[in-house]
Image (cartoon, rainbow, N blue to C red):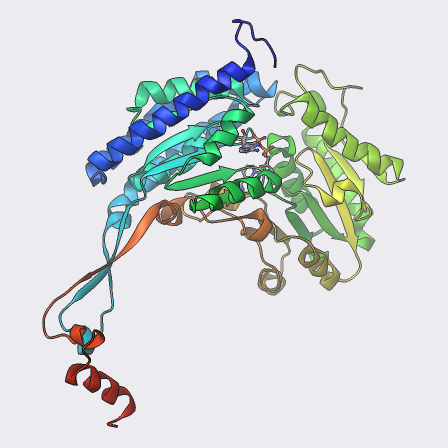
Length: 486
Ligand code: NAD
């Protein structure tokens, strides 16, 4: 139990935060029962307020990101955490009327006469969102877009690894929304665990597959529907026709975004064995030309904590210890500054599969380049592992790209670039199997956080009575129509 500057113990803080969580849920539940389904105009106002909030707090968001990461490029904060959220809210607002509309469904007039059937999305109610540290606003406020569009009330729980971002998130939300609509609870692991014990109407969790499993178990205990946005190893398959400067630029560019701390980064790539050295040379040239001082540049995001940094270093140390060809790209300080926690881009050529580097998600600026002999071996390698959150294929041949997409399974995919699918508000985002289940973004996100209610409105001239005892001529007529008279 640690003592904090204001004399409280960390446990006291979580006890308070847990009380705050239960109050927030009770307040939102009461509000939901009193007003279960906001109309279009109210939802549009909420989306506008959300977009306005991130834009108005732009500088504070930039500062909080830099404080938590040691170094966080302000342009990346603008592009992803601010414009990404505002753009997603604008996209949802533009389409919301259509998303909310009842969708007519077929009802056989022979059986159901003039009845009308439809799917009417309605809010699920009170929704929880457990957020990881790597995109503190994109992953709290991004899904909030579809949660609010669907008419829900929402409690957000940011990560304990991003205290500055969490405090700002709480203050911004409290200043922008009624607390019975959106609230934020901030605390440590005890609060995180308590959050999973709440009987939410829906729970979203974004984070590692290991904790995702615990969340799924806790949610199952109360039959809480859960969306799991998890991680894993996203591969890039480079076809023999595409080992070139453009492919290498795309792969390294994606790895450099957040310095590898992104769920849909290229975790590792698969390259034809006879072009392995060429790929490595092109990577060295790219960094020497475009980002020579990458390891200490203001464009290089810091690793979130020294513990995470040591984990990434240990992956490289193990590879080196096993005799792998490890190449640091560009220049880098001899040891990372603990305040900035930057690590250089590093290649590991053809590491064996039993290394931690090839078993665990890298989540840092290290790129293992695995060699393959036949193209089928590359596909086989991917299919032998867990189904990834994303898969990337680099080729000039559309047939090869289609073949890879047909023979592999992943949550998302890109051809000739990486991670771009995650930037589109129009595309569903999520994983499959160990990389997650369920989707957010766009209409799929709206539906994920809605109860898709099936509504049947009886009309005239139907055979509805045929289905209930006592079975009489109406029921017999239905059966005879199908099988012929007895
Ligand atoms: P993290 O340590 O911030 O944890 C995520 C959240 O889970 C935090 O809010 C934390 O407080 C909470 N948490 C931790 N332990 C818990 C427990 N026992 N019970 C309940 N809640 C708990 O983040 P992380 O897990 O290090 O995030 C990195 C992982 O997230 C990577 O695997 C990455 O690929 C994945 N990720 C996935 C997506 C996606 O959209 N699929 C996006 C970003 C990150």
